[in-house]
Length: 331
Ligand code: PMV
Image (cartoon, rainbow, N blue to C red; front, side):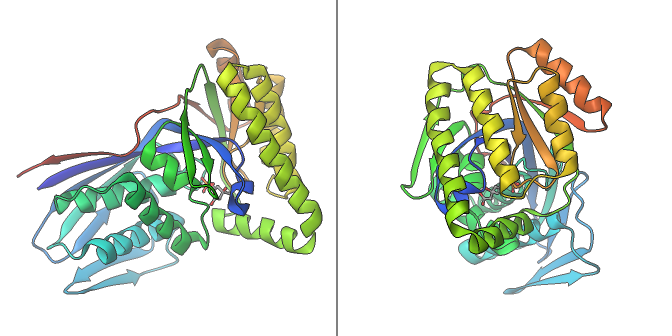
């Protein structure tokens, strides 16, 4: 049995970090995917390879009822998500006789593009596929969420939900309310620079600030919630200029929460000068992806040239309606 499972990445239009405190967010799946090609073997081992992700420092051996990880050096962040995904799949679905898993990613890892959630969703779906099982979206999102909790210490459930379901979502973690929205005409671009902190560290940084200044930080989080409510209406009515303004305000509030960096600010300001309707951190911040919204493809091209000129990597994106996909082939 051979299985190909894939999951999209994501960008957050509005609301990251506040979503960890139960506030809603606007998030979209993107047309960049992680694909896992899995093949059943009788080796008693799960062998993971990836030409694109940096999986250094790790060798994983599955035998009998136990999984054994040989950590040769500090495992890279991608390796941690991969091992936790396999561990979660084995706990929930039992053993397989063995398997070769090859991971391909169209996105950098640890960038704010939801690569970690997409890797986990694709591995777990491929594992289920090898057992001829079909996981429903709720069950799969919950498993991906538990991978994130193990790998980074906490998870709002936003990334797991959007990479599993696809589409543009209004995500409310408290009300378990996920609404799919019409994407309209969103011309998106990411300017990527490497991150200086992991998602877990960045989330803990905000937590420390919250504990030290809970009243003030609570009001910042409530303001982000208001932006999401306004953004929902702006998106529904096709008011992209309004949505861009809300993204700019959201970026200011993320800076106030301490998750911006000099490099991030550079990319944000260069993107705005080149004509972006709005530019902001997407994801956990501290470097990583800066998301810009443009009025049309030619302005987006100008922004891409501008971010490239300061050494950031431009990534053109579209909203992606498809979440996880699984194809099985016998033989
Ligand atoms: O940087 P990413 O793609 O891992 O996104 C993190 C999003 C946060 O809101 C900061 C954390 C979360 O659990 O939602």
